[in-house]
Image (cartoon, rainbow, N blue to C red):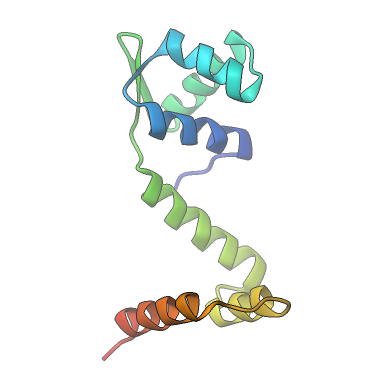
Length: 119
């Protein structure tokens, strides 16, 4: 299943992943503190994410229905496809043009590439 959320919904989900399961009134308080949202804004986002089957609100307890890793994977793929035609090498080249990797970062990336490579 493909999920589509905007930036404010993603910021909300970051809070939900951190706090879940959480009472909806407690979530209103947290969103007011961290995001500056009004009660109505928080409930609107909960309703929209529930309609998209990304979060649930049952008996005033809000939970994520989609994991952070699943959402990050999809967001990463969407970004790569939109901005770099799906080409990971093009992205890495653009990202590293004005940066230097530490030895540890380079080794970690090499290991990730080896593990993901087809034999």
